[in-house]
Image 1 (cartoon, rainbow, N blue to C red):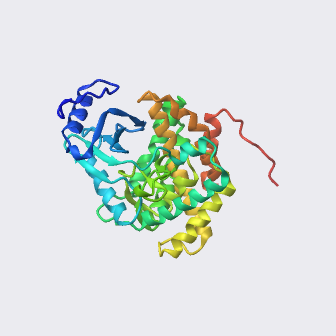
Image 2: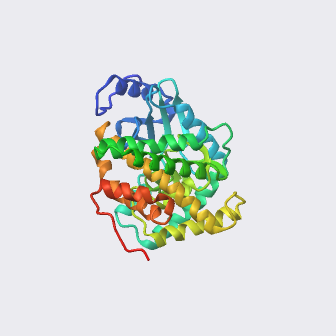
Image 3: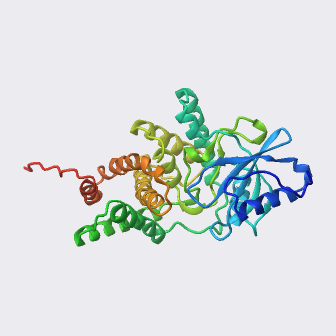
Length: 354
């Protein structure tokens, strides 16, 4: 076939598919891309699509990020920041920012989540998660200058997703005036406390679906880190909360605590600005996890109702359990527990007070 005549068959047969194939076929022949091997590589909650294809005894990843919905330039920018901090991320081999196409190195075929689902032996899991903690400490030392800030207003705006999509649309419940007032106070308390933490580069979704097992030393050491294009300057406890309160994998509290302590020790040794008192840090990361998981309840409900992706509903019980785990530990969140009980039809517990 001619170099300029793409023949691969994509799966939606749209104008964008044709544009992607044309771009790939026009790339330098030294990439040795086998367009007929192109196939979906992963699904995504965003508008991005990923494909894998063969290329001279290697595989490559193609990112399709429609420019009206996604910004390739931010991916490129954060990639460079993380590479400079020695975090294993894909190398960008070719890009067309105008069209929203990137050709990337392939970090591997299996995420941490894939391995967990398939039954990762505990010894291997523990070893890999300690490597993930090392990677997180490197990531938090990356240059975060000029990034947007995860400030208190943004945190409050994100929490509104819980009210709008999880409470009102998913459950069909209208809050009473008292519930609305109490919830708003909780949101403001959470957001202000979290925003006042020391700030570093924050991945936003540092969890098992975005950590790759790198089987080939040539591409870098495990874990490979993906999906970081939404990185912000934000609270230092946010990403460890993402890891231990994983929306797709249930970790018991003892395991959460073990990883949190190991992270805290690594962060202190690296000179990161974690609190010297672990009890203070523990509260900080639990509150960051609560904010994140309330937001996720809203996001998953929206993905189902607006974007017709019902699979995310399977994770709601786990996320709710994480919310309850933290909320029951701090009196300020008692109204939130009462609201969750109402949403789930749980009778309030009553007891005598002496």
